[in-house]
Length: 204
Image (cartoon, rainbow, N blue to C red; front, top):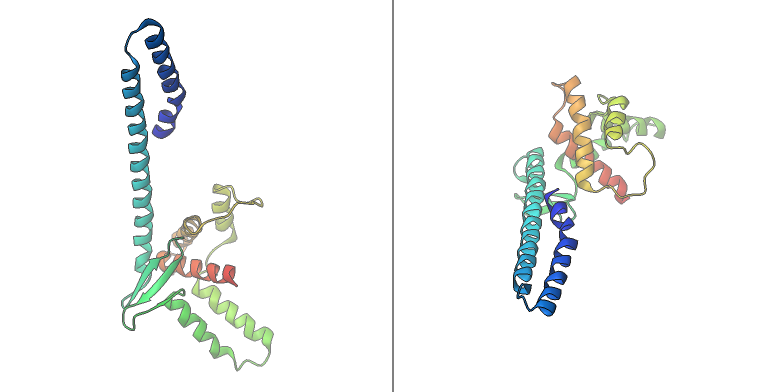
């Protein structure tokens, strides 16, 4: 709001400069320098306010990133690319992966179902394992709908939802789940795993 109020002063500053030039030209009263000083101070205020807003936004984003760093344990470390997509560093073997360590474990566990004869049953068991790992079996559809309704994204939209927004939605959804099943869900880990799963689906 402060920045918008400062920007709303721009037409007035422009008018003052024009009036000052007219007064100096027609009445030989030297006021243009004062008007230019006012304009420079206004520009400085806009630049300073914009810089502070950017620093605050970066601080909030970094704080959010720090929160999800606890979703992995040593030797793993969570990091994020420029577009905020998380990736994971293994300090033990100096490797990186786009997949969460627990997502690797989940994918490997699917091999346990390969002996099931019928493909429909195999798929069902894998989906059920995924559902339980992401705590989706505990998450009610009404909670998901309420979060989407809060953000007004129930109707089809043409805008792109970035990773930060997805994290926000997921966090609110699983916080509701945690309120109902506090002993059965780790919100931070579940949010990060679900984000990883969604990004993998999107990437296919």
